[in-house]
Amino acid sequence: MDKNIKLEEPNNNIGYLLWQTTMLWQRQMNSVLSEVGLTHTQFVILASLVWLLKKSNNVTQKDIAEFSKTDRMMVSKILRTLQKNGLIDRKEHETDTRAKCVYLTNKGKITIQEAFKIKVQANNEFFSSLLDQERFMNDLKQIIK
Image (cartoon, rainbow, N blue to C red):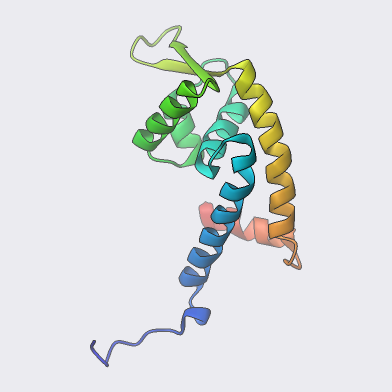
């Protein structure tokens, strides 16, 4: 390795710390959400659908991908799995024949309600060591902008 390359110590590198934190958080979320048969990514897609359905009855795969800032192809793959597991259904869009609208099934509604309870508790535990959660949330929102 080139000895002239200056590397920060990992514990002083914000990107590396964010990566480690994200990986630890996702592992914990996957572990707790497995109780209801979901991965963390599946939960995020379902939660996005729930939030979007509060504003519109015509939620598409594209809407979910944009809202969750997730790749469309990944959303498509996850939606297929969720449909196969009976959590969502897809129907023709009322005005756009190329698009399908995504809906929660009754099983999906029950599952996501249980998952939200589990997720809130797990998030509270995970982030409990933060001295100022409100500020941390505002900092994350600033980064996302």
